[in-house]
Amino acid sequence: MYYYYKETVITVHPGLGLNNFATCYLKHTGNWKSVQSPDMPRVERFDTAVNNLHAWAKKKKLKRADCGCCMFCSADGFCSEYQRKLSKICTDFNTKVPVYHRDAACNMMERNQKTGVA
Image 1 (tube, rainbow, N blue to C red):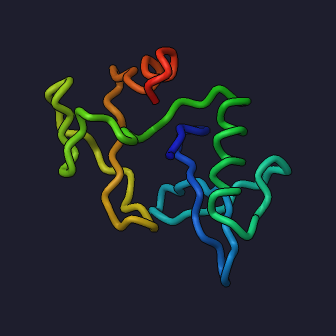
Image 2 (image 1 turned 120 degrees about the vertical axis):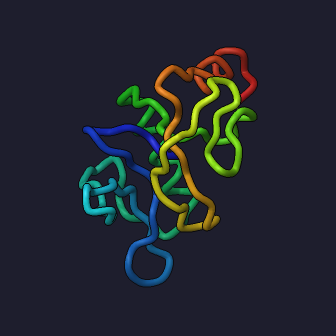
């Protein structure tokens, strides 16, 4: 669950210490910095932080940046729907799997949300 936000992407990341999760944005250096918003406080549980992020993103009408569980995106970042190699956002801290930007033309998640598939 990565979203586009102010010329970068945001997602949930662990903070310093145990049981400390925050919504963070990707800096141009490749490091993550926490978003300062009362709508997304640091919390003890990962799932709470994810729910906060989804609610905030919905309220702000943010677009998903990653392919998520798209059936057209391969593990090496190739989109078979648009026949293009996708650029890497980062490696997910939790799964250790590369996360790729969606193709600019892709609206798969939006279509699935309208039909209730996603």
